[in-house]
Length: 264
Image 1 (cartoon, one colour):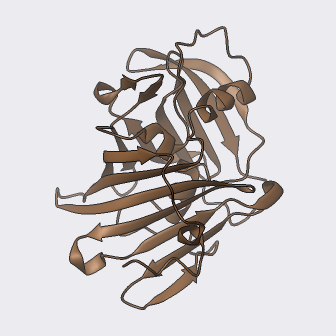
Image 2 (cartoon, rainbow, N blue to C red):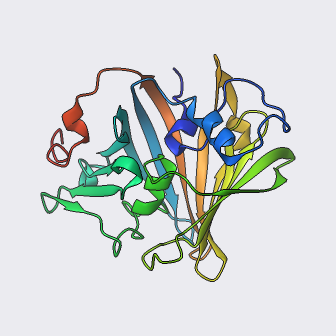
């Protein structure tokens, strides 16, 4: 493939057929439309992550994304290949069994240790980008399922969208976002926009698809580029897929805490 399915990487996208606005009515139906595009077994992608600070300075990372199905749900491991000073830095997210709590781990070559990401550190920047550890969990579908509601339909850049909202549990003081609102294209089920609300009902971050990169690949649609915008800090990060392979053999140890620091 020239590009792997980025919408899969962001876990909110894709349907193989053209869908009409009246055909999907519930949150579960819209989510099912997205999930039908997940690989049968595995995915490996090459990605470029470009960050821009508020004065226009830019920084680039190259990384590989590994995704695999397990009985408890998907797991994702991301490893940085460049630049040299962060090569080998890794991220692992494991979906909890039976809707339980997810686990997130990180490996930093400088300290040579694997550490678990706690509620106190989940909001921290991942490799100095506008994606936090928590954002990556949301974007890759490694999160507790269930809940959510459908809001009134809307438009994004002239395209009709379904609007889905998920709220944090009221008794969860560690929740980073009060609610997350996703705008899903009615024709392709690709996520075109996601708003992340902080406490106080303020949009802190906004994830936007570059619609010009939306295209079909056989029976799937994909977006080749997304941008995460931090509206408070006035910074942004682009994530671009440069290549990928579906349903290849990926060893289970790649998706374990003990295997996170290997293969540097």
